[in-house]
Length: 452
Image: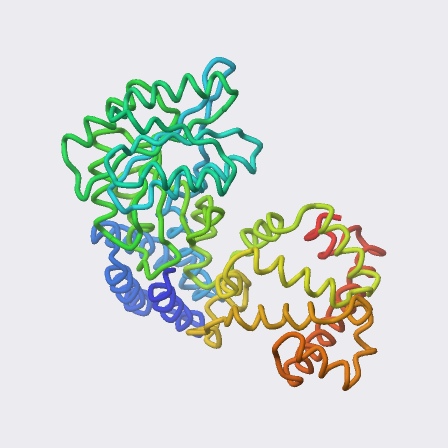
C-alpha cells in the first residue's frame, strides 16, 4: 500500500531534513520530485499541480526558510496538505434509524469492485457497534451473487434477505425493508448489481432503488488497483446518484495510491472505508491524517492500538497487564499473545504502523513467514502444562520429546526458548517502568494500552 509513493516522498523529504539551511531553489527542486512521484502514483494531474502549489506557497515563506529546522517544517507542511487532500478528517457513517424505519446503506459500483464482500465487511463493522444489520441480495444478474452473500452472512452470523425467484431488484428491496422492520434490524445493507462498465440501464436501476429505499447513505465501492479509473468511475456515479462516500477496496495490494489521493479532490466525496484484506474483518474506517502518516513513514499508532483492542477483550487485556507487572509471564501467555497478534492482521502491516519501523530500510521487502509463527505454536502446544508454566525445567530429553511431538528440530525448540527468555526480560523491564510510573503520576504506558 503506497509503497513506491511512500519511498519516493520519504527519500525527498529526508534529504531536506538533513540540511541545516534551505533556499527557495532547494524547496522548488524537492517539490518537482514530489510532483513526479505523485504523477507516477497515478494521482490526477490537476490534483498533483494544486497540491504542489499549496505546499510551495507555504514552504517558501520566511517563517520556514529562516527556521532553525526548515526541513522539518517542510515535512510538517507536506503532512498537513496530504491530510487535507484526502479529506482532512474522518467522515463517519450518518445512520438515522428510527423506531419505525431502519437505516439504509445502498452500495453501488462496477462488477468486480468488491461490493458483495464489502457489504459483509460493513455488517461486521456495524455489529461491533451494537447494531443489528440485515444484508439484502439485490444482484439478480451475476451468477452465484446471491449465494455468495448468503455464505458470507452465515460466516459472520448476519441474516441475509434474498428472493431467488424474483428478478426485480426494486421489489426485493421493498420487501427487505418490511422484513427488517418486522424483525428489528436497525440497518439494512443493500448489495446491488454491477456491470463491466457504466451504462444507463444500471444507473436507472440504482436510481429506482434509491427512490424506493430513501437510503441514509449511498456508498460507491471502487477498486484501488484501477487507479485514476476509480476516480473517473466515482465522478460518473456521483453525477447520477449524488454519492455520500466511497469504499476503496484492495488497498492492501499493489495500489499505487492515486485513487486514495485524488478521489476527494475530484469528486468532493470522502473515502469512508478502505478494504485491507480478504477477511470479513479487514475493513478500516478511513482516517486521512493516519494515512498521511503512513505514506510519510511516520507510523500509525492509533490504528495499531485499535487493532489490539479488537483482538483482545477488556478482561484479557487487564489479566495480561497484571501478569506483565508481576513478572509472571510464561509460555502459555506467550502463546496467547502470539495468537492475538496473528488476529490483528499481517505482521508486515503491523510493523509498518510502528514509529521508527515504518519506512525503515531494514523492513523493505521483508517477507514475514507465517509458517514460522505456526511452528512456534506447534512447539508450545507439544509441551506439558507444567513445562509451559515453568520452562526452566525443560532439559535435553524434554527438548527432544517436544521436537518430535511438534514435527520440528531440537534447534527450533532451543530458539523458541531463547526468544521467550528475551521477551520475558523485556517484559520485566517494562513492568519496572510501569511500577515507577504508577508511583509517580498515575497510570503508565502499559496500563493505558491494556486499559487496566
